[in-house]
Length: 452
Length: 130
Image (cartoon, rainbow over all chains, first blue to last red; front, side, top):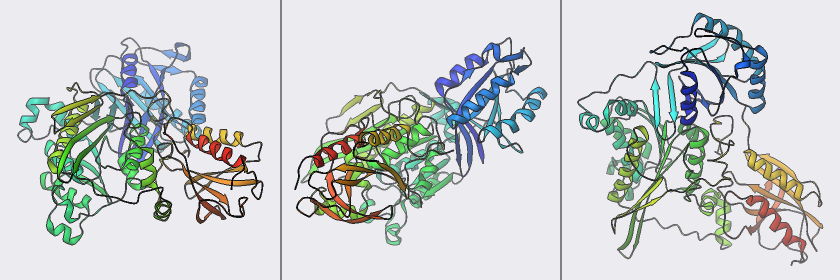
């Protein structure tokens, strides 16, 4: 079980400014959402304030004591909001990651049992110095663990691991290192990437991510390969069609052929199944490779609720009687600090409704003439899919180490060689990407998924 | 602690309850992860004159457009039938008639669409219909 703390970039930057004050210890109290998946335990911090000076009983370069009434009020407030509490303090002047002091340990011994009586765990304590972070998480007073990962999510996605990950093999990534440097390569190796949909774009995404150095995957797709997939599903073989192999298993085989040591968690489920949705929520970044609007709506929600950048990709090939009139590869970026896919206009409520209708209801609506009932496979070709995946992976690189000057949505029209740029702002009343109804709530809000 | 509906949706349901207060008490219910609201609707010429109408809150609402209504199985219109009936279904242990009744027009997920759907349905039933 990996332990982690996720910050929004704006909070993180503000906390660092407050905590790196050199003359005395500073305390910040943050409220956070909880996040537990089969192999991750953590909190998602959105907001938090420096403790006001009159709430300190004592404060100096090596110590702090807070008024018990102030701490009790904050715990009560967090409990009433259904959130947990993160206590963050500084050790000024250390140019290496700090340890908790004996005074801190004494505070933990007194505070943690009392806090966990008032709030549902976990409780988190972090210490910051200019040299880095250290942290502990308690699910119960006797269950104390060291924080192993710090994620900062915003314009840039940063992952700091404790202890720091060794540099991946230099020879393998020599050309990439020359372009982006070792920090990006280390981050790629530490990322968990969820790929939703392992068809035309998803299979390529899995293969290319393994090549560029990603080593931890969550794969989600309910389908098995069919003969018509062989022209586009990278890694697919005729004998897979004969044996009815699942697309997630083909992607896993492809990844392992490039990176035998990669961790791959496969879910042969629709992402709307709660088990799959929860697995996706444990990712550091999501690549959405389905053309389902219902899946897109759910993944969009996960991105904000769990502070996960989301790269959504699609292709559209307009063709009639063998004549192609338009070929589009479309990539849009969403997630904390960005407008969501709804605000970008790529979730169609009617398509969601149609996709979500149970079979019997759907049949009734077709009989009533409300739905067409005609589902024609869309034209699709590998080179156009590859174009979308290229744009998406460039976007992923940029998320880790900013270098692109792209707007939120980029559409490449291959026939006329045109690039369409769009950057739609969030709608002011969107509950997904504005306000505090979704952002960073983690497990404290249920996901709109299907159990069982 | 896990809370079910987003506050925005919970507030919208409470607004629907308030809208309907004149006709009777609306009921918000859950069954198998599906949230529903049963609204008493004054129905001109119908039997009974106040018809319980069930609206489902779509799982992916508001990104999923609300659709279909369910009338209490005992209700019938002035003609003795239920127009556009699609079949019988059971929710909350009660029989309902599924009706092909749809929200029309452009859709903006940031608006209170379910409330607008309930209001337009109530308005339809308030005037004489077959």
